[in-house]
Image 1 (tube, rainbow, N blue to C red):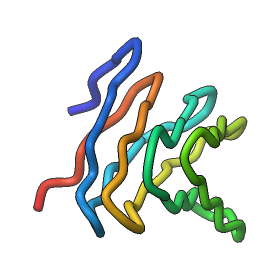
Image 2: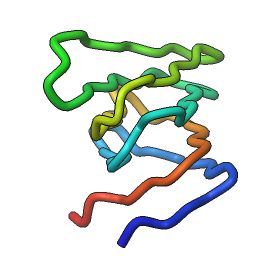
Image 3: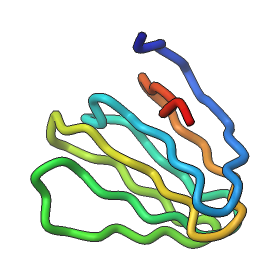
Length: 83
């Protein structure tokens, strides 16, 4: 189930993933560590280091992958991937 949130602070372990079902207008901020973001049907690879941010403009799902233990802030609607 999708949950609207004003701001969600996450601690992602190395290789952990977090799914954002509709990333349009959602700001993703890497607070520490490094993360890789991929958007459905988008050929770009977006890599964020500490203090970098990214906001998608299109209505696409986004997958956030922790390349190392990381702290991430997500402002918008998000859904975790069950393990």
